[in-house]
Length: 319
Image 1 (tube, rainbow, N blue to C red):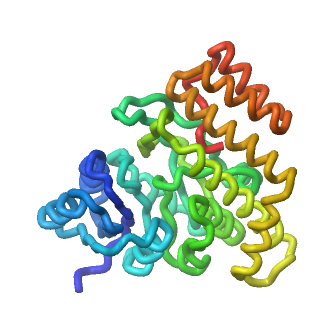
Image 2 (spheres, one colour):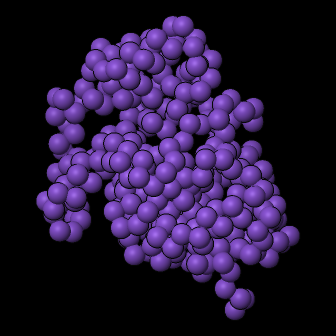
């Protein structure tokens, strides 16, 4: 067996031939080259698999695993079990990384043994690859620890973990579809320090015009469950996570006020995406709906920005 690498990079892919090459090449072009690149082809039905195989023949650091479609969360856990590095880094197949991303993250993590998770700031890209804005990321261990139970502070594709922390925490919980990353970040933060690098070392692609409202709503519903599970866990209301706890929390989200909160959060998310795409009128309508569902300062603030155009190019899509 080859020498154990310092870093394992994990990337699940499904039907993404358009942007895949840029993502792979951004990893192969890193200034820190001591890594293995583990990629799962999760049941792609197009040329994605053949593109990956071609890259694997060109660079021995790449290992491609073809499988039937099992979904993102299970694919991530499979890759985590296969990883041999002391650190594990994420990468999404439609995004790409700055050439010095891994080198800079490893310097920070090696200098702070208490740090279990480290993300980076990012640039938001259009589907065509144009930089829309630079994300306003939360930095500082204390600030993130305070804010994380209220909102996700990390760009999933940009994060790097210590392998032992990742595994000791329990990997990704498969029940949390679309919010498995947020739940993992919270659980890691309860045992270790977590932080972000302020520099934009990751390029996150977003298509504001075609993001599914239904999927966004499901993701936000799961985030509400994740936050409530975090509150209960920290309050000592359960000793170990069970599927029954998830089902109880899922049912709780059907309540009147939970649904109103979900209506508001979904409209806010849609409004922010429309703002990024330059549709101020559509964004204003979405923010108005958010305000009507649950009047709150955040919705009014974004509504004012949409109506006036002030700061419309710097909307935080991860808040």
